[in-house]
Image (tube, rainbow, N blue to C red; front, side, top):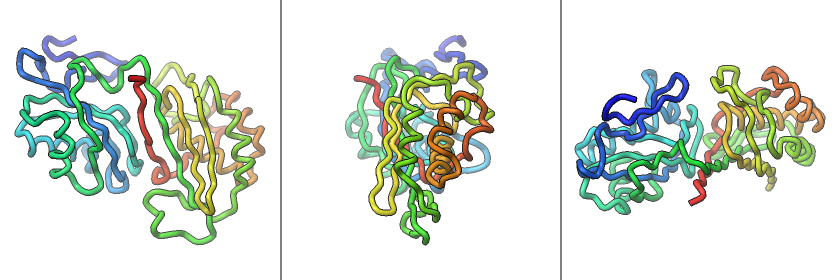
Length: 275
């Protein structure tokens, strides 16, 4: 661990536990937690990268304009390009005199309309959004199931023109509940040793042409929710029987599952830290 940086090693990745080096009470810093919603359509995901604008970059620049400080936010979930959020969580350290609970209002004046800070609050300086004992995430995947596209849904739902059998999709979804090895449902580039996760809820609701898959668990592998969605869509179209989902789980091979569903239907609904 580098002196004064508070960095922790996680595989090949170094994450700053204190986003601002040498931050602490003696230096007048406080840590602010944000709950953030955004339309991810026009962003290349959360994490800063060289080939396009990201949510993290926009937040950093807005905080710079607001506080005059060079601030790096640390996000709980690094959503992919085109993925949306209603409740992502991030923290940053600052010496700003703006009251923590007013930071959300002040920051929203500097942000574009497709990024909104829902609330802000002060947390202990060692509070980190990724390293908590209790982290429960909830995602939704939205499908617009109709012969003709709805232009008002294009940014937030995936259009499927062929009829989907929602009852069969629900049958297939039941096999995914509980603790399983989800190796078949993660991107082949996933660099993790343990692919076991627990899904505590997977509900599929249907209202007219709108189908919503809601999934809650203790953590998700890279592309896991979108691959689950792509697989259950194949069940709904009749390409797979519901029992095929169990076989895919047991195979532990990515090639056995369905395609990765498009990003525009995916929403990070919220993160529960059990507080």
